[in-house]
Length: 152
Image (cartoon, rainbow, N blue to C red; front, top):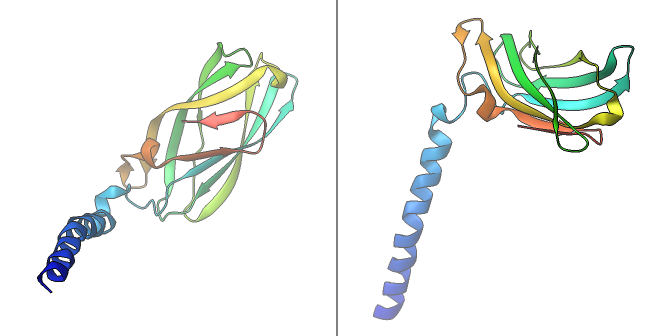
């Protein structure tokens, strides 16, 4: 009986810190940026040839309650050989709350078949109606429907 009691107590003692940690993480509102229920999602949806080079289509989903007046990202384009081909920035805003939108941008001077991958190097500016928002890069999610990888 004492042996069974010791085992039960040991199992409880080991589980207690884990459950306390899980409760703390879930209950901590600072774990996500203000108004960002599950983070902004950027999907590279399509690349197509254009007169200037290559046109990219991004699908941006803002599932949270925040209206972004500015969401400027720093992009680095890697060519198919892995060498950096271009660095530029685009502003994906305005982003309305609980809304999916499509943003287009031109990649001048580089043909689509030379684009190996895109890296979101940073979120340079992230502003809502109430001012700057912190943690925009951390909560950003990426995906692609093309053969070109989009990452952060």
